[in-house]
Length: 359
Image (cartoon, rainbow, N blue to C red; front, top):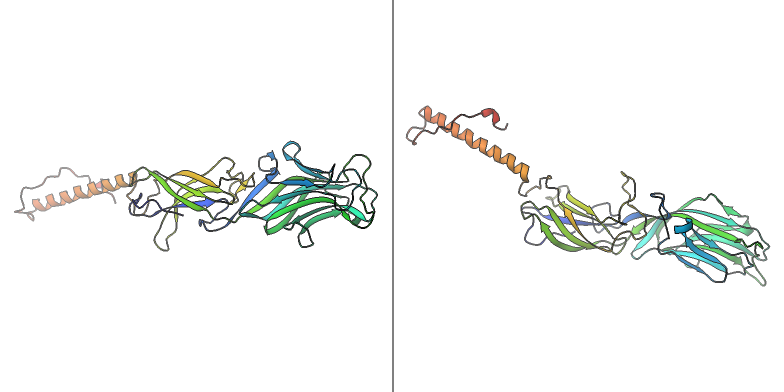
């Protein structure tokens, strides 16, 4: 939040430019906010796009870790068709962008674990949060063939949801788990994946942990009496700068009044359906870290303490003229009755239509 230069662009009032970072719904720039990111295949617009920031990896040949959301509407992990030994894996890691964290996730996915001959090991899919090495406290979902799990919603897919608090990362993994001398996970023998995991859609609630900072007001258009716009800049190192609002400062206890608002637009446009107050995007970092915007001002608001806008000024001028005319008529009446003798010549204001005086 910052004010214009000391030249007082708006006379008699303090004009504040409030810079709202992504997800900051309450009008206070120091608050952390939240926004929603719909990735891979978006239910908002039907858009399909690679998942930004998704890291795929594997540690042996013929294992699959491929983000094909854009072309095939799915990001795929596969353990391969050959015999595997414990520790062989494919993995997706999605770290939260800088100065953000994950608050919640809805994952639309499907998993298929095909049968095979295993020794002291089992093919397994696991979805967990936060840690590089998973443990029971971090597991969101898993499916192990040795414990009777052959599929999760295959082939239609469905959604698993989890509250994440302030998680720094999400991890999906398919691997051959177990151990001991000679342990292995058998292959399928027909060229298909022993485990096949697919992300079909990903909805994340993202905490923007960064408060926006002001770059100051660079221009005020329209003059000091009735300004028409304010240009300012700001930065936010989390989800980015989404919106600028111009508010009129009120006396202590008075309600803040918004007199202008502009959004950045483009990828930084809310894709959600009104009247939802959520900010819904199709990128993990949807808005620019630095932005300069010109905010048009609503000159019909009638800024308290400022020079009145045009139609108020005209109305008050008519009131003033009517009052002066009435005063002249009263003086003339006094002169006619002799109450004003000795004051000079009688004033004849002409006809007066009192019905036109404001009531």
